[in-house]
Image 1 (cartoon, rainbow, N blue to C red):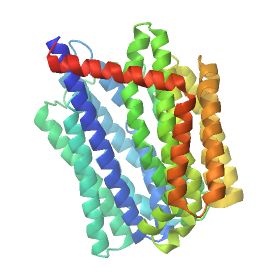
Image 2 (image 1 turned 90 degrees about the vertical axis):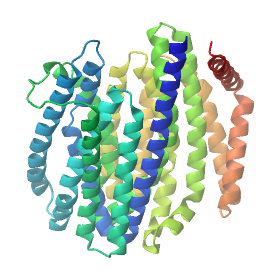
Image 3 (image 1 turned 120 degrees about the vertical axis):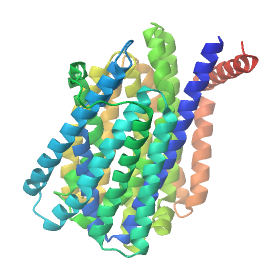
Image 4 (image 1 turned 180 degrees about the horizontal axis):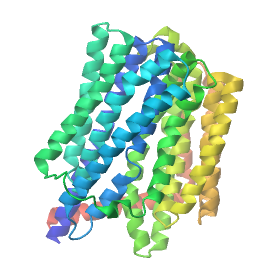
Length: 484
């Protein structure tokens, strides 16, 4: 029992390290991008956003799911970690060189704007190298369950980037030099990651490549590509339908909901391993109850954050950005609904993954991505940035319908959560907005209070599940304190 208690404390410590590092790193990155948006004009920020998006696409192709197979092979009993790690690094470095060359050639064929190409060259390669090295270190420390080093890598990298960004702005350096140094900050973070890893383990680049790393790689490639494509879809596609200045406006509006989703994302991470455990033990009823609690919890958090961002959007834009970005307020308000929709989607999709239905999740992701891409291209061509914002919301709605359709507990999700929560949220939001549309702060507080109160008054099952969950946690804490 003492060993189990120590294991529980270790897991708790890992969660704490990941939580604060994720929140802090994302906060620092958001600050650096806000500062850059104020330094660049809309057109330069649009080019910069496209360059960042293309870099993340290239980053995926330097991995191709290998991080997942590395974790799988390294976790096996009796695994030769030195050989597996060295093989993993060797393959990633080969892919990095190959993808860098292909990427350099591809951008000259895909884009005609010489300024955009020059921006990409300044951003892509330093950032690609740095992020690849960081990912290698993060994968190793994730395997060895030393999450404090993952936290250290993330925070150091984000801190270096924001220090360099501030230096460039105070020094009033040229736009392209600033973009290059911003990317170089990630490379410094990558060097730090490799330095920490070399101190904690041995590597031998002369070993024969561990072939098991390529076993069952295809599902990870498909899943990874879909996860990577969703946030990068808009900047890349909008470059073909909108002026770069408008792409910059969309990027500013999209940045905030993307960053705020990290909060419900942490909730999802806490439920995920427990859901797997219940299903693996064939405890289907408990799995369903816990997944419904996850969906409800994330829906409530998502609703509150959506309401908050919608009403505070004018203040955020006016406080953090120059007047030229004022046209980002309306798209930001529309995109705020992504938070609640993504919260629902991830929770329902986690229920699929943890119950052996990953293939269904992948199919829904594929269909939603194709439909979303078509809508994004069409709506942005017709309605500009506002059309693009509506397309992103509709994309998440399509995914939500798909996940519900393939879920084995679709009736419970629809009748216990989606319909009642939508009614409470929709009626309250429209009513408060109609009466108090000029009083944003009052509307914010009143809206959240009414929605949350209505949900808890209606949802007896949620109250029951939450009280049961709290009692279990208190019981575990008591056992831990007693050292039983």
